Image (tube, rainbow, N blue to C red; front, side, top):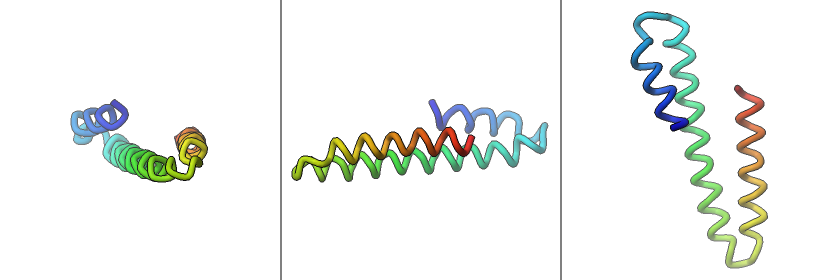
Amino acid sequence: GHVLGPLIIWQLKKDEIKAVEENGRAALNFQLFVTALAFGIMALSMILMIVFIGPIIGMLGYLGLIVFTVYYT
């Protein structure tokens, strides 16, 4: 939902409102970046489960994603 919302609004309103064109593209790029980063953190924490620090890395990574999202929105 966090990627589909900006995508749908951007596609429906980009021709009507110039600000939606610019901000919609930025919002979609940000959400795609956060999604890719979340998958990377998940993969890294799964690999590090072998040495028992994966859950810690996963929790810190997702906490960082939340802070990053709040800071940039």
